[in-house]
Image (cartoon, rainbow, N blue to C red; front, top):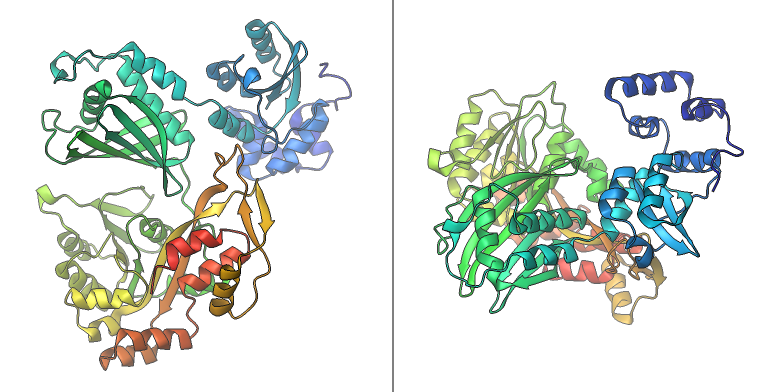
Length: 562
């Protein structure tokens, strides 16, 4: 394909300026940034927000006179993929789409890259036809289509020990071995698949490997049980755990670089009848923190919650079970507070993400640093805003309440089923109802549900039971719902990502009086409903109606609550 015909004259920047897509000032700023840090002008314009992906993609398609391909709707042909190694595709940022006769159609971020086309021809000995897509879409497609499963199996097969005994003394992990490479590939594939956890589960005759993606565990691979000891040892060495202790539970952590991403990995091991089970929690430090709307706060709840973040003192609690996103909500909340004006401090277990201009501390039981002791030390540092990772015991609960009473805005999390049950939990921990009434600003209960994949989302008809539930909870008819049919982007699950379901209880004067007078939790719930609280059921069903999630997700996550 000839790429130089009918192209506008000048560089990309000049062409965008001529077409009034950007201003002269924006072009100058982008060029200055390019001179400082290098890189493609198109990527810099995107990062600065001067153009959108859609605007740039459409313009470049016209500029280069090549078709614009939407990789969300086009499926890569396996035969085409097999012709190009992943390393070459990532090097030049392209992906093969399909074989057309004696030609290979490739999707490129830069159709002017003749070096890339030469490398493609040299590798395949086929004519090269070029189409265009944005760099972000091509990177995502590479992550989806190039999977490490076969490569992991090949690496494992290179090193299968003939015995299952303890061979740690023979291992040398200072050099690359098939086992070390297999672990790298396992983690790399998990990051590509957006997994939050990797589970390594020894069975009778195999090592079962599962990834948790969008809150659900999926079987990803199985390898011979013979490699279990070496793989476990490699992980424990990286995490600075004791390799000789396999019968005792241990915790550790290490970091790894996957492309441009920096991944923190928390490791936990425990003994089972088939051997040592290991779970790896993946924390992508390069991922930008969510905003409150991105977490799933609907406009009315968002407006009320944001107003609470400006209170000078008091306590805001976020509740829910393990894995319900409490820490993410707490992080996002304090991230909205002015860090230049206020002294913000945290005590966490562990510190999952680091913030600029916020003083963060981590629990260290060996050094005698608990939530309670860390909080007391923090109060001597003149803080305005305090985040306590979790209220687990009486000492921490009372110290947090006292901090809120003495002029500090305190954020924390607590395990409870719903918003009002957090009050019960505080009372059970030994906090007087009067103190709770005096300090508590709001309670936010939450769950996580999977988002419907927008690429394969279709309209569906709700069942009779679903219509009845919706009518009873919402007071109106439900005529349609949405579901995902499954596609290559979502791994044929119909879901892509997760979103929160929230229930916010704001402490009113009437509720304060009721709490001080010792009324039951049931009466408090009734009062909250009278004052217009959105329950998690209500919030979830609103998201069902808007096509954000499915009825099944909300029912599984929320309808088990009383």
